[in-house]
Image (cartoon, rainbow, N blue to C red; front, side, top):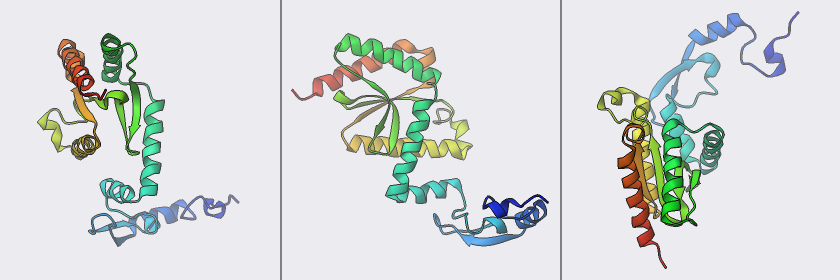
Length: 203
């Protein structure tokens, strides 16, 4: 007879029949993030702590230890994946313009800042952050603002920019559409940003 996965400590139910029963037998819990009451399957009552992913990230972010672990996990994921098309364009532009401004000027991709965020690119010596924002996921078009994931990204962008600015960084965001379709304008803007930060650099 096949052993149950419960015997190996790998599950919460002894059989599929019980799993389906537990799925439909729901219990009420209070969300640790927002305080609202929500229901969960009986089998998840000890594991589910929040009513939504947004609340889960909220309580995780309130714990410095967990927040650091999540930030490192996001950083590892971003550094392992291939750059998006807008990021590749931005990186090529940075190669050209930093060499033009000062051959010794160095920029970094996927730089982790404030032990919380990983930005697309930055020039640390100039305290300059460059982001290549996807049109959909960062809310370029108002029609996309009905997606809660887009709204969360937009709110995070505003919060991130305010925190980085408070720490002395200057943030410039470039839309995917502009990087792909209007590279001359992006070039002019980035060149001006580098020149401005260079002029403000002490010494």
